[in-house]
Image (cartoon, rainbow, N blue to C red; front, top):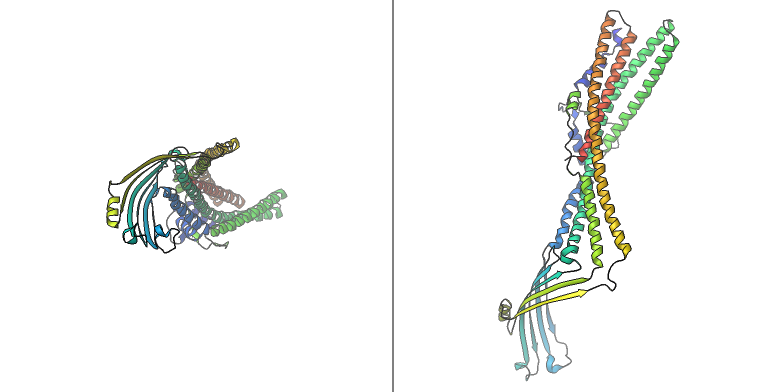
Length: 476
């Protein structure tokens, strides 16, 4: 009769109970699988590049404040016939070179420091007007120009909005993609555990089916010998068919899990040759929940999107504003027949020029349509509401996952106690069987109860691991 108690079941159950986390080269560890996903998945590669690119491009918003260097120059040889030959001369050559450095500041102030040097040589003039019929001169000019907006872009409102818009657009994409990548790796981790659990579950379901078959055969024999009622045979047959459906479901789940496992590492196969690292109940109970980030990436993305809306609205508002600006210039000029003295004087205070002024321009119809103002305000309020909603959903998701995680660990303790109770019950029934106090049918029934308890514990283990993986999307 003992042959009816499958020894392989105890080997399997012993292996499951051990469920160790020892690093073994024959197993594909979770870290190795995630590395495969990282290197082989086009979606992961795309997200990684997008994260890096948007992080780097966010600096574009600060380019508006970078100093700009400009240079221009020309040489001209003019032999055109003038309208007044008495004054125009027959030949004129000239050159001019300008070097400038300008910068925009966050206050809206623009400053430009420039230096200009040029010369002009004219020949063929009337000798009475110009000795020798020639007139030559060189000039140098050092100039500093400063402009400060007062109304439109008043003290840099538009300038900062332009900078913020460029930066926030890139950062919104950066954080959104970063959160998406965390979710992808959480999904990959869940997929790894899904396959590990599906394989163990299928093995256990095979054992449960085998027990159901033996119970059915045992019942059939008793019915033929008229030792039990036909109803027992019908019940055993229904139980056996139910187990057949369950093992088909377990088989399909294992195939689906293998397909999902391979898809994440860019393979269309529904078979996985590698063995996955086993787990143990004690390790699962000792798993701590991840540390939640103060502000997770999905919330950061929403906050940056709100910045985009606020900046865009400010830029739209500024377009309708009158332009009132103060400006001033300081210049030092030098003019001489030769370049050297002209250049020297242009760097001295010998010939200064000071200028201060005001400039104003305005649209023909000042102000904005009330619908435009109302529309912009609604957009901004919508963005603020979306940020608040994202924060609320984020907090709810975390609390829900954390609670499920904690509750599942509590149920795992109960399931583990149930497994031990069922094992103790089975061992005692085997002892009674050896003494001839019970039947093989009863032992097979208890074996089935034990296997079902193991399957229940297995499913709870999957729930713990899945919730733990999903929580990582909101962690540091």
